[in-house]
Image (cartoon, rainbow, N blue to C red; front, side, top):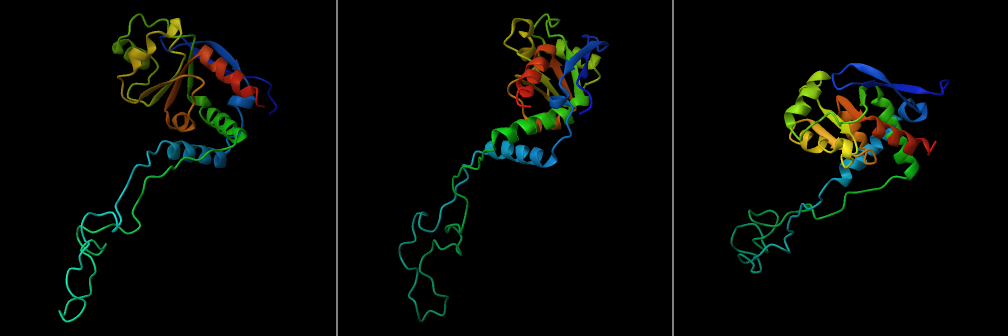
Length: 217
């Protein structure tokens, strides 16, 4: 890109602009690779599948060992078992069995997918210095914060190190709000970044993400 720097707006707890955070355009300003994003989202969905669906074949269904009637002379169709897939209570033909749906992608592809999703979601970012202004682990405080940012009833992704002292209340304050997800900055999801209406991130989280993925450029 022609520019060497890119800035994200930083806001106060009242939702008013209070400065900027400098980030790398190679992380937050590239042209999103749609094909790689599609692969990454497919991988996340596939890796999240339990794969525990299970049906019984005719050999696994209890009963059916005796031929229900003789082969000829009854006027009825030939039948060898009451557990045939044609019968009610019989086995299932080619039904699902437990399996692993997960698959992997090369590291460079995963990194490009994250950079693409960050770039696609760049306009959604609202950066705050930290969440130390939350004085208690109360949902109403987080609700007020979202209201200040005009994010009421929106799908919001919060990126912050909720284990840090300055962010100690953000997890408890946000976890009961529908549509709000909280993630650590090193645990990004392409699907969640693309799906969110807004991304509310601490300045340290943005800096960590920037340093982590700029190292792969």
